[in-house]
Length: 221
Image 1 (cartoon, rainbow, N blue to C red):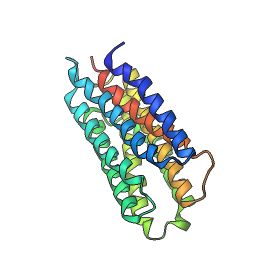
Image 2: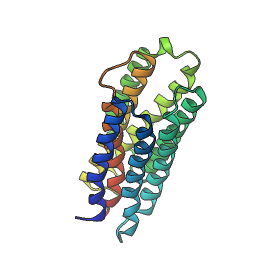
Image 3: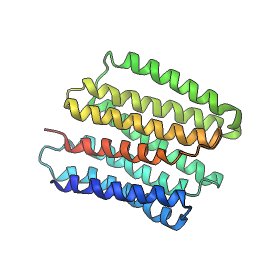
Image 4: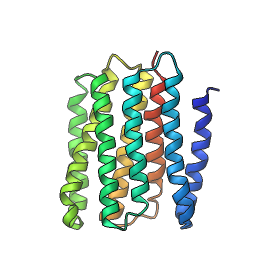
């Protein structure tokens, strides 16, 4: 088993314990386990730099996105404070921009853009319609966030036809981006619409999505 794959069971353990800590409201454990889980994903992407067939553009772009995600994770642990919420939102916005740029650089415009854009437009409008009544001053930041994450997912889907990626690798990137989108949609609906008893599942979608994007860095060659 390669060093990268050894990290996956460790991530599964930290995310499981993190979900348990959130459910039991053991906040000090959340403060440790949430950034630790993201650091493990960062290590997964970083280990690709040791491979001779690495793609430096992809790895650097993903690492940049993960660093912004780490800042967002820490900020959103204090999301009851508006400044922390805005910092978290802005950090994840920059993470999506980093991902979208690297996916665009290594992907290509193709017929995938048409159906993916239609689905993402419908999803974005639907999510916003559910949230808008309770957004108040957060309306513009949320609209911008929905647009940017939709662009990121669209660019991830087009890697399926990009020359730089194998089929399995591109599938991981697309699935990872979609999982990230689902995670953020769950969090937004729970915060601005109504709480959901199973909202902790968003952590599985989030870390699963980030892991797939990071693992793709080791798929070149």
